[in-house]
Length: 158
Image (cartoon, helix red, strand yellow):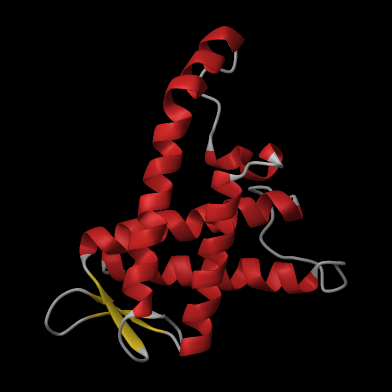
């Protein structure tokens, strides 16, 4: 892996340099996220995507979730569609506008949150055990973290 997957484009925008297989992986993960959002058979897997707003007031929380959840799902699905459209174009490099990069980051982080739930990752986890039973999943989490970090760096100019 190179230091950063994203670079600033000469003509503007943000260039993502990923091979076809890597783009296909991200696209497939976004498809899986879409499935989780539209068929919530295991709501615990997407719990981090819908944080509790009123933790001490269950009735208000239930009302908030009732009113906002569909809108949040619709927004996430639209973002996933847009990101997949951008990823599907171009050769080894794909160019995002600033707005598209923001949506990409949100979608990618949503995948990380679901994967983190599956792996029981906490804010204190910065390394993963080599002998963990889900080593490929930990590697995927690290890869998505690297990709998100690259997007943040290019967007902030760091």
